[in-house]
Image (tube, rainbow, N blue to C red; front, side, top):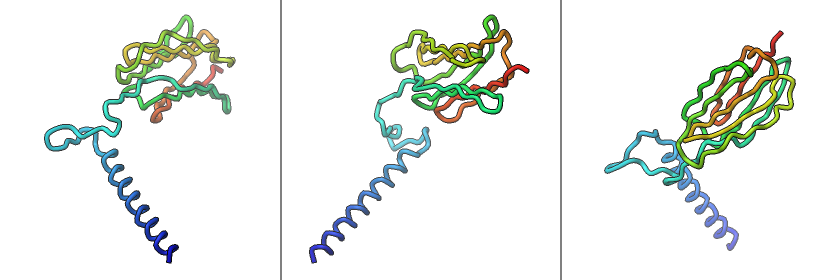
Length: 158
């Protein structure tokens, strides 16, 4: 008899937990511009804003192509890039909320024959990522945003 009562209680709590999760998920996935009578929809995080930052980066090489992957702390608002010469480099500007302290420029060795150095800084919510190249010419490249990842894909000069 005790086993039946206990399993009934467990099933009831599991149903209550599932309903609570489902109702919470509906609110979290509502459109950003949704409103509630008398004001904006409450944010599941309240007033917390996650500053834009680089959590990690990796340089990889596959079939003669290089990729520099940046893992961000959040999905950015906007990503733009351009190339510069002398020295050859690709500059990626990533915009997010103007939250958190500014980050002074930081440099990391590229440890690669094509990528000589990675520079990063943040000012007023704009994260600047600079991929400095070993050669004098910027090779064909593309920049892709994939949620909270940014990939700089490089085709080495022939």
